[in-house]
Amino acid sequence: MNTAIILSAHGICFAIASGTAEFVAGWLIKEGRIRRSWIGVAGQNVPLHPRVVRFHRLAADSGVLVAGVEPGSPASRAGLQEGDVIVGFESERISSIDELHRLLVGRLIGISSTITVIRHTEKLDLIVEPEELITDIQKN
Image (cartoon, rainbow, N blue to C red; front, side):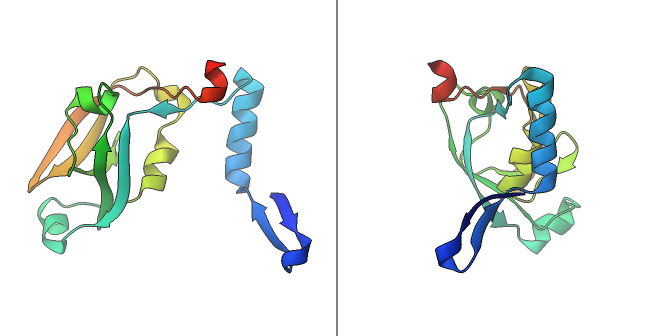
């Protein structure tokens, strides 16, 4: 679905995937707003060493490096640490920050969820309880 077209820039446009539009429309009809959950980490995509992937029998060769943990956040309470690499969330593989965002939907707010991380050489399953993401617009 095209959202904006810049005609003077040879037809460059910005679009939203039809799956995203369908998801958003469904939530808007159901609840009147979009609810997202939040765990409180800053992350970036990173490749995993092939030995780590093989040893832990991981489904993907990349994950999300935890670059920061918000103090007092669900991630902090769950024990996530800077340097951990997120490789799974609720039995789903996580190979990118986009996959993690896709899974942090409104239905998980307040629900204890398993997050799988690689810490140094260990594979750990931690329990995190995502909270509702409150934006500045919602605060006003």
